[in-house]
Amino acid sequence: CRGYVHRLESSYIKNCKYKTTQHSIPTFEEVLKFVNGRVIVNAEFKVLEAIKPSLTLIEKYKAHSWVYFQANSDKEKYFEARKI
Image (cartoon, rainbow, N blue to C red; front, side, top):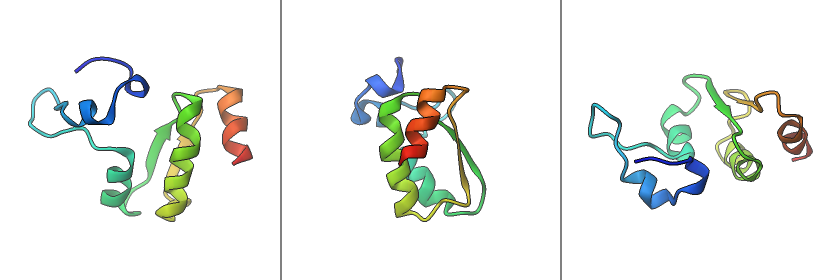
């Protein structure tokens, strides 16, 4: 499987496997469900379109205290996230 994640269909990504295993790549929501506050999640906003859905999931899973987002020094992404 190759390509930029934000350009791929989720069904395509779900069929991708890690190189040395048969495990598929989880969605961000699957990660939040699995972790459920037991560890800190460090995620990065790669594209502007990912910000609102990601923050909606943070609300849904009450993950404000255990998910940390980076904007990779991109002020536009930072301020977009702050608006929400």
